[in-house]
Length: 324
Ligand code: UT7
Image (cartoon, rainbow, N blue to C red; front, side, top):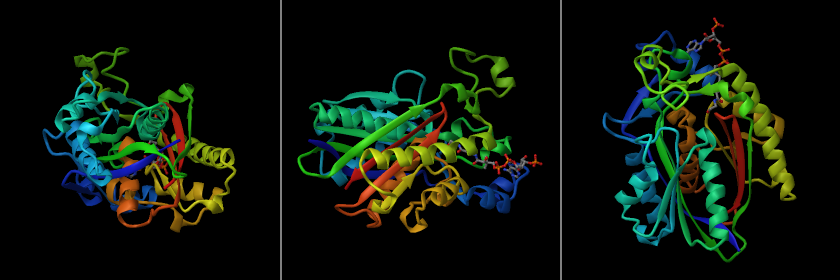
């Protein structure tokens, strides 16, 4: 028995923030952002619009695509690093909003890898008897961005993507998931203040420690190496070759990272889903948004072999391979 993806959905806030808008906020240029990242615009949540609001919209669309009601769900997992509150879990707010009265609910924190990590949890639960698990990646990165820091504020955006993972009796489904971490590199991407190490205080606010900090250049190099390594390990674990893949759906951080990974793997650009020009880096939401767009555009069909690849804070890196 396998777990398969019975439906996908996504949601992005209405407000578009362009590179031209950012030129008016920090010392940057549309040319620099496009050339160094591939990003042209990103979506930003409205004032008062929180992680669960985005997650609920994406979750509803995934349930509709799967032909299921919220009451069919056994579990809701929300992958996020920008939940509505430090406590309780955003998944519980989603559970209530959806009316998923029979579902357990909790969050999973693995930054940009959160969706793939949560997918692997859903896969394991479905294989051990659960019927339907809703997995959502949802982020309001704009809440943890320092809008005076040009090193980070041009990179991120807000959004949510969701999948329903259900039991499959056929050949289709998640073939394997692969999860890695290296906490020795935790300082490459970090929100240093606001947690138990450095609780909220006037000092935290004065030093802007509640915002995301990133050593971009060092992160870039590790990203290329680990994405290639985990893609090869995933294919090898399943006796597959790069040529067997129909589509690669990577975390959307930087088009130059992805082009370097494609070159190393020998993967043509037609087989890679790229939408970071429109959304920027939406952390845990990036893969499920890209997956949903690929399904709705007909790029993923029954029988397609699809590989996911993610990389992010922790550091963590992760992959999954799915026969659709
Ligand atoms: O999703 C989580 C994982 N995150 C990632 O994978 C991000 C990985 N890293 C990256 O995507 C890239 O490293 C960045 C896009 C963040 C930066 O690109 P880079 O080519 O590595 O640039 P850099 O950090 O080496 O900076 C080059 C120059 C610097 O100026 P100097 O020191 O050479 O004078 C920066 O100050 O670019 C400058 N710079 C900017 N200039 C204009 C940095 N940010 C900007 C900006 N606009 N927004």
